[in-house]
Image 1 (tube, rainbow, N blue to C red):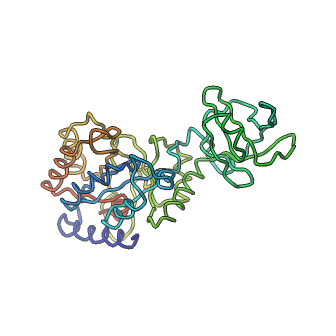
Image 2: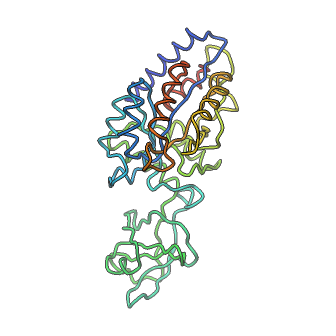
Length: 335
């Protein structure tokens, strides 16, 4: 599938050179649907496929592992990929780099024993606000929704968001004066989400930042695991400078800090048309749109009618609609 995406991008690059000429780059638009909502498969796919337009969906790995209502299944994601869509990672637990430890080396945490209802549990010695995963001897502990549930389970952890306390109950009490665990880091979210999604047969090489939280440090970490990464910023991505024969990159373009424009339920079709006209058509920039669900029951939804009207307008104006990987390749080649 990765070979197919790259081949399509190269064919598109050749087409743009023939139609636009070597001295003029051509703007592009990418539609990215965050979170892997089911409405993207049931509603966005038919609308865009009818008009021959590809898109991207960013999946939360945990929701693919444990499918539940409102999110697309692994089979639906594989079908999207088969139909020319790109699948990106959106982390494992939908968490930002400012919420949890940043790097793998930041994960170790030493807990102290305390008695709770006659049971020895191990607790963080200071306030702990966010935690999505805990590992003991590199094995994951089960997250529990309450302290009482943890006490009756074992091999588990509980984070009390109000009291800001993190507690762990090992399967077997080591009887130690302390216990060192690893608290899941953002680097682990980047690394393991990619591997988990690839394990399902999904060709993942792009990362889309949850909450659009992005820092210079998370940008650098993403480069170890992904060929490109997108945040938010409500900006556009400028093309590489004119030239030929070499791969080139403009300071304004960073493949691991792609800017996206947030499309909210209140965003009008006219606003989107103006954004694309002024940037992709007139300035030859790459406009990446951040969308979520489709239909009234989705988060910050775009209506089916608005999405169809936007797709029709893109076709009428001969705007190149590409996936993230296609756009990044064309951008690096100067288009």
